Image (cartoon, one colour):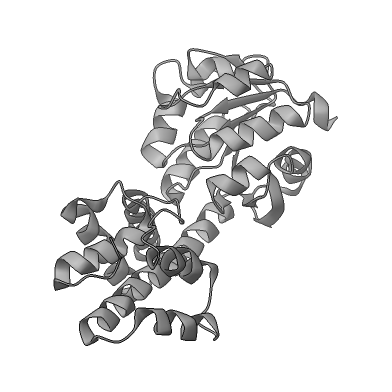
Length: 301
């Protein structure tokens, strides 16, 4: 049954390319629409994928449509826009949103598609484009049990770990919490290494100490392990996207409602980095923000 699922895919970006490549490799037929970038589609076409010109076309003669774009505004355009998925919605279709989206928007799209017999699943991702190419992403799926069991083998084509985290909507919420905690660590690491530079202590010795203790993490290794060698590209997640995810998280906490003073501070630190012109750079460039703010040098150049 799994190999016979016909797949539509919207968003062949840094993550989407690897996902689409692995779906093809596992025997799924695939038609796709480029959202922005056309630089990485040649191998998909060579492997038998079909490029279409409208989002609605991805829902024609397919069983499952994956959407992997930046966030809720893009997802809403794909669903509601001209030649959008809503236009081609048919009973039995499953739309899986792998974007990091805003819970309120996700709930509205789900209700509107459900009225047409379409099941809308939130399945955001963690890890990086490298793991996407390797078929080793993690996903957290919000869906009813029957839908999850149907899509799990398809998700396994590009995921090492597939977590069923609860009913529809819970995947998006858990992803925002996960990203908040991760981005808070990145902001704290950047500030800590700025203090080290300002105080004149050895950043390498600080890194050795942190690497040997409970503070150690993949984030520390990717961020500082690269930065000390002049490489700010080991964590491939743009600061502007991080800012967006933190905004979604603070909207979530306000809606619950609950106090989230740490999240507000972390969000503003990423806003500040964007204002300083670093939005298109990857999150390790939060170190560059600290350099600009404090008149110090952290990253060797």
